[in-house]
Image 1 (cartoon, rainbow, N blue to C red):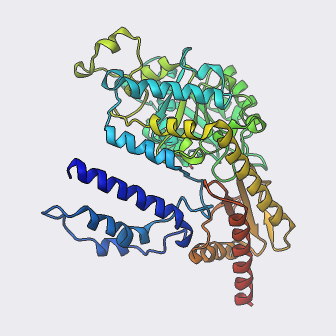
Image 2 (image 1 turned 180 degrees about the horizontal axis):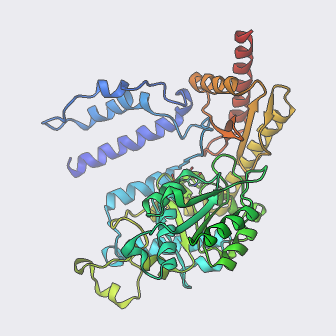
Image 3 (image 1 turned 135 degrees about the vertical axis):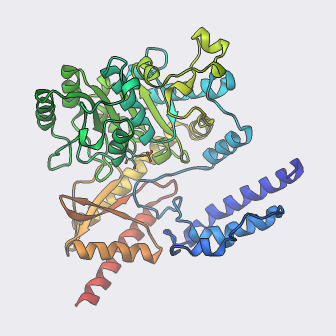
Length: 474
Ligand code: PLP
């Protein structure tokens, strides 16, 4: 593809995407494709001769779209959102086009310095504590995911707890980490990867609102110490995956201070809400956190992948992850006056992810982003009110932020069937969890273009499907 063709095809791709966004509501939200549908239609081998770009573009429509679940649809209410926006997509295009590898400051100074500055902007925008600013001993870095951020936090904590021995001998089976039994599965996966092991992650019981119980945390730490094990890491959740529950961070932070444990805070989804002063109460207690993470790629109009990860002591992170072969030495790095982000993450290479976040923050400005958060929270509250007022449905827990956990009163099997029916209709897409063993439906309002009419439609689709099921079962 020469430059002229690139220009023509590039315009065609943007046109294609703009058209797609215009007609996105015409598609079934969840793909109706079955296993193997696409694989069967694809040739078994790569072509020997190049094909025209127009043919490839036509196959996007013909082959790929039927297998797409439309995450950007305003009627996508499943899991947590992964919302995006045109400025973000264009920022991503720049990152791909420039093709920068930002592993060292020297390999593209702008890649490092924009990232540092943007993450400092977010400290201020979310009113995060000062220890996470790059001007002090801490700082922020963009990771691919919250899973990776927590892994880095664990490795830094392990290195600190073992006085530098962790990198050489790994977890020796005595280090113990703690989180609530509602924490995201990535915490356990990270414990496995970091050599701590699933058996050495304590999943602390929660209260009736699915928040970690601090007295249980203290008891568990005491039991481990008495058995000669070494507690070293606690992950507090601000917004659990099932219900967006917020752990009592002030109590957890006190325990971590008293016991000299690393406190990591996972706010992957909920963190964005701190743009609005009225939601910042959920962060009470993070003043003494060692690390914190949230995902702009969930609720901040920045397309996947883009996770923000902060540490209070960047040296602890670098001690765990820094490794400097001869071929990566640079004069700037030797001077210690620059950040080499390769030492703040697991991979060596890194994309210029800060660009898309910069494009988003500049294009919208914080006030419009706050308005989006408030709109989603209002929509969820409205939906929760309809559930509460209904005879057939009930709330599983009081809604928090933009998530509503609810169920039909007819029991687990009915709710499972209901979920299947509404998702198969293609009108909306919701997901589920289990709370205290009960099958529970989740509706999370978080797409860029979700309005009142979409949530109203979701409620109608749910009620009508429930009525049909009740009639069929009679
Ligand atoms: N933490 C929480 C609370 C989550 O809800 C999720 C994903 O939904 C994650 C971590 C993992 O996020 P990621 O896909 O960025 O690893």
